[in-house]
Image 1: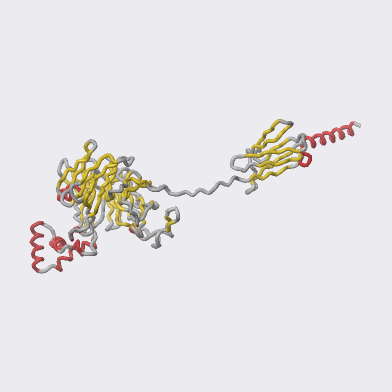
Image 2: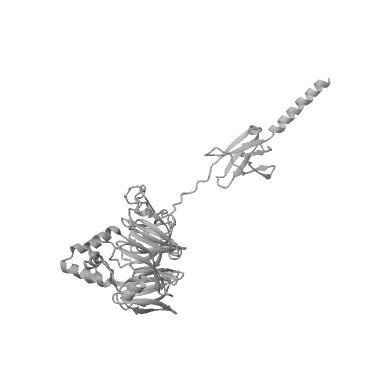
Length: 471
């Protein structure tokens, strides 16, 4: 009897347990696209006139107790998904698992465009011809008319008349300006990054006094011999060169103004062009050879060097001045010796600290010379790999605020910059300039400034700027 009682008791326990386990509804909420469980879904329903709320767990499940009336509406909501409502008839679903699919909210597509360049200087009455940025602000050389007629010696030079020098602050507001009393060739900078004007008969130092600008004239010979050769400085030394843009060799120099002494940092030579330069001697007439020998003896140089100057070698169509600028980056002097294809490094004691190849002069990155494509947003992407030397514009520029260096490239009107690693000489990815045919490109404090005028437009030449690497 006891054994039968135990069996009956066990059966009753199983029945009661089974009813307890099935006396509810299980909701399984799934993502309609991926069919994965969704957690933290808010589930609400009516329970005897009062609202009940629960949430799904990590497995996407939620348990709901059945109740009268026979059916009710269950509402489901979660951020990122479309709200759902389902009607449940309790008698049909008690003890079952009810799957509910929720659809993710589809957001409309957003077109991400590059920020448009900012207008720095634009006037309806004046063209912007040149610019220079320093600690005073943004200096703009503006003009009404270019000079259309010029001498043969000035061929190829842009000479401006009716010129004004304008100073803008960082908010592009004009804080000072003054007229320039003669035709002008452009803005120049001295070793302190101060502004100098090169006119057609004089040069002008620029001084800011109160709310005005004062121009202090001095000779063009002094500008070319005492100002422009000196480009930078380090503690105790002024840095420059003795390049005359005729002889294909020159020295980078360090001058100590206290002791009035100079040291040679390094010498750069274009050996191929130098052979052509020196070979001019054999093409001189007998009389000119005698003159060359006499001059060489008088000034203490090689007669073949004298002959190169006498022959006007720099006027040959194949001649290009030797380009090997020096820049200061940290405690290192960097000489871009393009004739040898090397970046030469020197410490502040002027000892050579190493050399690395100039990557933009090599051809190791492929031979695709096709121009970059342009999409409707104005962004450009290269077709294939870029040939390192292809498109190099023959110019290196430096951000005087951050001391970063950039190689300038140009092809089919598009211009882009590539930062140069001063340690390895390698280049970082392209930094494209938005508009075609920009002029007077400069970089200051990670901002690119340039002069630009839309083609087939009545707009005057204006100055724009854009951030480096903003896409």
